[in-house]
Image (cartoon, rainbow over all chains, first blue to last red; front, side, top):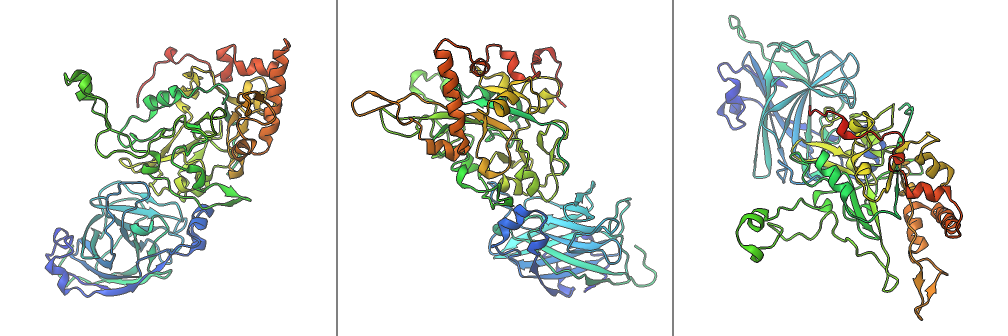
Length: 224
Length: 342
C-alpha cells in the first residue's frame, strides 16, 4: 500500500480519524484471520480457545500518510460493541496495532525473534495515546519508554475509526522501525475484539506475510 | 522451568479454625489497601460446605487433568463480591443515635466474599460445617505460571514462593482462568493481576506470614517442606495428616490441611451414633482425595491415646504448646525490624 506525502497536514490534524486530509488518501481493504491456535504460547490458552473463534474481526480498511516527519495509519473496521474501560475482570478492551519489521524478513507469526525484532504501534480503547512496543519472539514484547506512539479512536454506529501515528525516525538505541520518505517496508495489522475476550496473541491479524508499505518520496527540495 | 531448590509450605489445622477472620484482616491491612485492591482478599475463610469465594470456584475449572491444561473460567469481581461502601459517617458522626444503622450503600448486594457463612449442610441435630481458610497455594506445578504468555509469573528458586512480576504483567488474565483455586485477582486501577505473596518481605526477615502469626487459634504452621525438625515435614510426610486441597487439580499445592473431625451424630432416639461420621466421608474425599480417611484414622487413634492418659507426639504438635515452634524458624518478632515503605 501507498502512504502518500501530505505536506503541511501535521500529525495533530491526522490524528483525527475524521480529518478532511484523510479524504484524499487511498484506502485498502485488508482481510484478517485469527492467529493460529497452535502458536498460542501456553497449553492453558490453547485449551481455553480450542473451541472458540479467534479473531472476530475479519476485515479492516487501512490508509496511511506521512508529512515528512510523522507517519499515520488510519484503520477502520466493523465492531458491533464498543469495549473501552472495563468494569470487571471478564471484560477486555478493543485494540489495534500496526506491526513493522526492523530487519528484512522478521517473522510476524512469532512476533519477531532474537536479533529480528518487530515494532508494534499499539492503540487500546481504554487508554488515551498509544504504546510503542518491541518484540523479539512470542511473549517477549516490551513497551518502550517515551510517548512516541500516538493513537486516537472513535467508535460510531458499530464502527471503529482509529489513527495510530509515530515519527518516521526516532532517537533510540532500541530495535525499532526507522523510516524515511521513499522507503518501502513491510506492514502487518492486528485487531482485537474485546467483546470476544481477545487479548495478547488472541487476535485477528493480516496473515503471516508482510504487506508492502511504500512511503511516497518528498518532492526535491523539501526536507523533513 | 528448573525445580526450585527449597519450598516453603503452610499447614492449616481445620480442627482449630474458629472462622474469626483475624488472618483475613491481618492480610488485608498489610497488603491490599491500595486503589484497585478494595475487593481483594488474598486470604479468605469460608464455611464448608459452601459456595466459597469466588462464588462456586470449585466449578470454574483450570489446573490440569492427566497432565493437560484444563480450561478454566474467569472469576469476576461479582463472583468474588464487591467491596461494599457503608454509611459510617452517618452512623458514627451523624448525631442520629440509634436511629441510624450500618447499611451497604448503593445497590443491594446479593453476594459477598463470606456470604454463606455458617450455613453448612445437614439437618438438625446432625448439621455440620467447618471453616476453610485459603491463600495462594504457591503450587509446585503452578497453572498460573504455566498459562502466562509473558512469563510474568515466577516461582522463586530459594523458597518456591510464586509471585506476579507486575512490571511484566500486561493484565491479560490468563492466570486467573488457569488457577483452579481462583486465588488471583485483577487490579482494575493498576491493570495487573495480584495475589498472595506469602508475605515474602517478612519471610526474608525471618518473620512468619501475617496470617499465620496473627492467628489466635494457632491454626497455621509454616516452614520448609524438607526441614525434618519442623512441624510441616512431620505433619505432611511423617504423620501424613496434612493434605493438599483438591489434589485432583494436579497443581501440587504447598498449603496443606489437617482435615476436620466432627462430633458424633445423633440417631433417631437421640443416642450418639458413631457408626457413621457427621461430616460425610464423600464430602471430605471430594476436597482432599481418598487419603483423607487414612488421615482421619491417624488423628482419631492419636486422640484416643491421649484420652487414655497416654502421650501422643502428634497431638502435642497439633496443640502447638509452644507458639513459636509453629513457624519453622521464622519466629522473629516483626516489632524488632525497622520497616520502610518503598
